Length: 85
Image 1 (cartoon, rainbow, N blue to C red):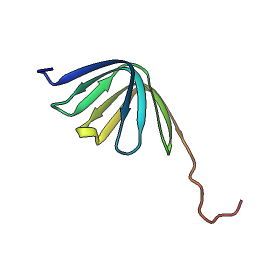
Image 2 (tube, rainbow, N blue to C red; image 1 turned 90 degrees about the vertical axis):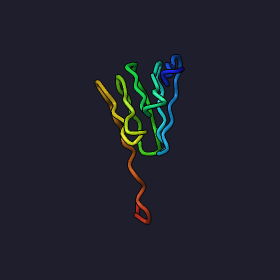
Image 3 (cartoon, helix red, strand yellow; image 1 turned 90 degrees about the horizontal axis):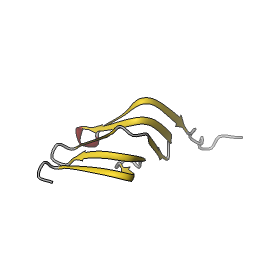
Image 4 (cartoon, rainbow, N blue to C red; image 1 turned 120 degrees about the vertical axis):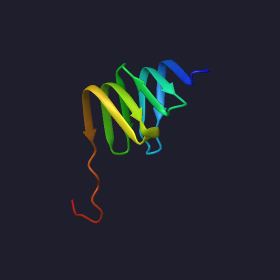
């Protein structure tokens, strides 16, 4: 606790202000330096799509999220307003 880091394990869910949420089995969060990382598989989603990777890093107070290792991203198409079918 004095070091300002928290090690989380077992069904960890992280949320971002943009609506992104992702799940992993383990993460380390540094509260003093505003970063988080994990080297366990990650799965996440928001309204724009889904992702999966082998790990992650959250940097710059959450402004940058890097998904590490092999990664998969699926983007959902946006519905066109007023367009015909």
